[in-house]
Length: 217
Image: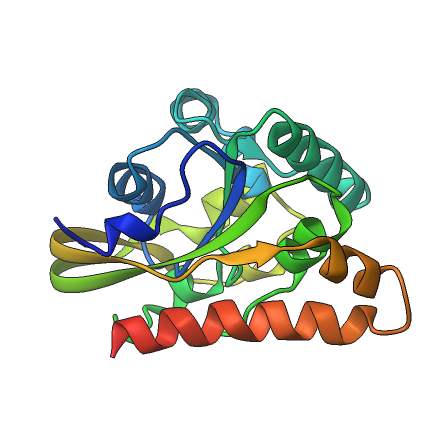
């Protein structure tokens, strides 16, 4: 693993780390690349499978709750961690790119939950840090985990309600590119609370997506 632009990692302040996502080992890779303990928002099913739950929680993950409680639980837990000046890591592409075996240099559509969290939390000295995981060599095990098995643990996830399997990608050689942090200022908090809230969310989401996409080129 080769790490670039480490000097961009904020020191001594809370941060939301945003990254592209293709492999189940991305949390381990991202933690090693940033060099700080990260608290991960992970998929609901990871908190339902006994051995997997123990593994992900040992790495600082907090699995999503049931869909009806998910937004409130996510914002509450993540905000509390940020107020404790920890780093919270989020994969805005969700689980979709892991099931579709996307190309290493392709970034999917970002969900905007991380941007709402950053602008709503009210945490001082908060940075949003985009990080790109760029594969140089990898090994793919297609359909390694039956989707029907995952559906048993999380029947609320429509991606699991189909035939086939969940591929597993193991990185052999990768580059970790640290992007330029996006600082959440009082002006942005004020903008989010007013009529320009949508623009503030769109600007932050676009910035992180574009930063990661450019680093993967």
